[in-house]
Structure formats: C-alpha cells, structure tokens
Amino acid sequence: MFNLIRKELILNKKALLISLCVVTAYLLWAAATIESLRAYIFIASIMSGFMLPVNIQGQEDKFKTAILNCSLPFRRSTIVLARYMTIWLIMLAGTVYVLGIGALIPFTRFPAGNIFNPQVFLSALLFISILIFFLYPFVIRFGVTGMMIFLVFTQVLGIILLFLTQYLGKKQDILRAFIGLMVSGIRYVFHHEPTLPYFFILLAAIIVLNFISLKISQALYARRDF
Image (cartoon, rainbow, N blue to C red; front, side, top):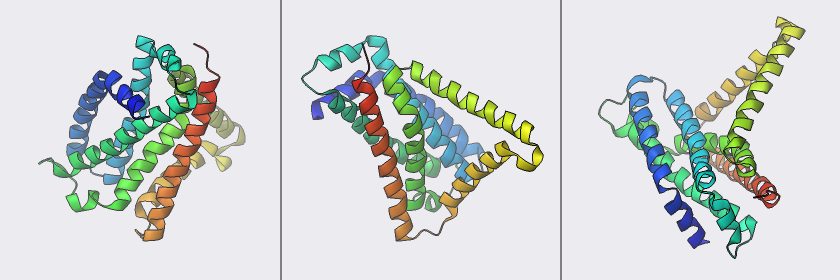
C-alpha cells in the first residue's frame, strides 16, 4: 500500500506542483479581496477539491499508467484505495495550506483566530469531501472524460430545475428553493454552535461521504476496461 501511495505522489508530482501554483495565486487574491470568511473557505475548498482528482487522473490518462497499475500484483480495489489515501493526505495538507494563507499573509482580511479553529477546518474538509463524493466516481470510471460527464450532468440538472420552475410558476420556484437550500446548509455548517458533539457529526459526515465514494469507485474501477 505504501509503495502504491508513493508511486501516486511521484507520478503526479508535476501536476500537484502546477495545482499548488494555481491555487496559491487564487488564494492570495481571494484572501485580499473577499470579505466573507465563509465565501473564502467554501470557494477555496471547492476549487481544491475539483482540481485535485482531475489533475491526478489526468496524469494517468496522459501517460497511460492505468494499464501498468492493473498489471501490478494488487487488486483493483487496493489501487483505488491507494488513490483515495493519496487524495486524503493531500486534502488534509491542502486544507491546512488554504487556512494558513487566509490567516497569515500580511494583507489578509481574516483574523487568524477566526480561521484556526476546529469548525472551520472540519467545514473545509466537508466541502471538499462532498465534491469528491460526487465527482470522483465519474473520474475513476471514465477518466478525465468523467469530469466532462459530471459537468454535463450538473448542467442538465440545472436545465431541468429551470424548466420545472417555469412550468410550475413562481409560487413553486424549485430552482430558487434548491439554491436557498444550499445556502442555508452552508450557513448552518458555519454558524452552528461549536460544540464537541457537532464536531463529531461533521467528522462522521466526512468519513461516511469518503467511505461511500470509495466503495462506489472501487466497484466502478473493477468494471473498467483498458
């Protein structure tokens, strides 16, 4: 397992460095211009969660290493587990990096005390986990093409919601209700009283999302042809 994780880090070193440069440039701009800590954490988490799996999978598609991976004396489920463990390690390090830039650069708008607390850290991990939960099974099954399938799926979903909104009328504005539900969920995560049971609930949600995503990806990867 350790050798598989090491292989993932070595093969994706260049992609990770490129992602780090892009994310750093964005974070420096965001920390200096965005006034809302919630918006900064949410957008930075989504950006990190989107770039991470896509860039890693992009390297695999580019160099055709999937066939090599499957020729190794490991089960496909173990290969996927190693990929997820790599993502989790980078996700933890990336979250600390995101929070560090937001708190420590000289021109930041966010006091360090507002950023370095368990609620913000777990909230960032939760947003990244939600994106990986929905995105990565597409990517693991279809490669980088899976990202396009995911984006098309979300666009089709938006069109359906818009059509239903127009069909049902303003009294049953499904699109606005859906967006309002998302906004309310984000506010709830950030504004809930920071109690120990709540932290355990956030941690449990992160674990469950990643576990389900892992199992789905393992099942899809076992059926993938190369």
